[in-house]
Amino acid sequence: MNSVTYAILTLLKEANTHLSGTWIGRELRISRSAVWKHISLLREQGYDIESVPRRGHLLRASADTPWAEEVAPLLTTGSFGREFVYHDRVDSTNAVAAAMAAEGGAEGTVVSADSQRAGRGRLQRKWISPPVGNLYFSIILRPRTGPERVAQVGLVAAAALHRALTGECPGLRAGIKWPNDILADGRKLAGILCEAKSEADVIHYVVVGIGINVNARSFPKELGDSATSIRRETGSDCDRPRLLAAVLNAFEEDYRRWLDARDLTPRLPYLEKHSLLAGKSVVAAGIDRRRSGKVRGLSATGQLLLETEEEGITGISSGDVHLLVR
Ligand code: BT5
Image (cartoon, rainbow, N blue to C red; front, side, top):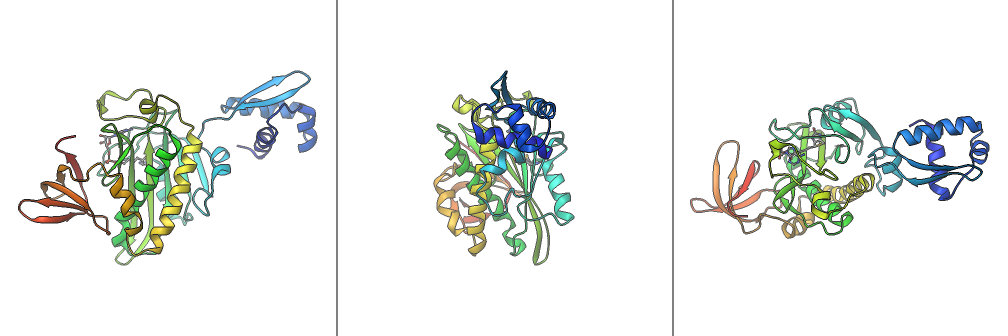
């Protein structure tokens, strides 16, 4: 958004009442017709502005677009979201963020989009990313720690995402399914994809990508009955910029605490409390083998602890877990 348009938006937000075109023009040293032009631009961008002759312009509702203009004023962070790039449409916010990270993009940089042409899941899977109503964003992190802790970043993100979702959306009952899913009523509401560039003993960057089904009312056939949205679960629409800011605020707080600790210990109680797998019989499908057993918790390094008949308690580091009974 251009800086004059943004200045008018800020004046309208602060005023909370009608502002005349003459007054706005005088404040910003532009003509009344220029004020009109910018007000029209704001309307095109989704801002609901009432204009009444002799009274002026009143902002009735802000745009629900997850861009810096709406997210930045709600941030309580030091670095998360302070650099913020928004696109209407990209292939994948993770791909854009990774390219920025490779060029030196700062820790906390956020790439957000209204839709993705080629949203990515783990292991070459797809994240279906239709326009209008959901959140797709990626954050660049540069943790000063060894590569063996990369997998823990996704779990820290999952705990923060769960905390923000349940804090912002009254009535939402959701849980965390190791390693990277947020489910509600057994259906997937949000997913996390961590992609890292590291060497033997140093992490160059991690890109944490988060997709949340926010106000989606329907889902493509290929997802069958496996997906849900906040709107579906709670019956009401959720303000996307507010939710995105809440996720960034929670994530930065948890991330800093995790960096200061040696492992996941500070977040384990939260992850255990909201785990959908605790005590459940599951099949864990790793890259090399499948194991069946009962989930006995999470280790401080982020492994899922599975008790199997053959091996007793073993730690699972990666893969997909399927519940045998919901
Ligand atoms: C994930 O992978 O859950 C990670 C999803 C991360 C998406 C974000 S969006 C912003 C950023 N940019 C990207 O390109 N990606 C990240 P995984 O656990 O592999 O789950 C993928 C599976 O979830 C698919 O195979 C589908 O079965 C299902 N799925 C795909 N799209 C979905 C959606 N919109 N809602 C619910 N489930 C979906």
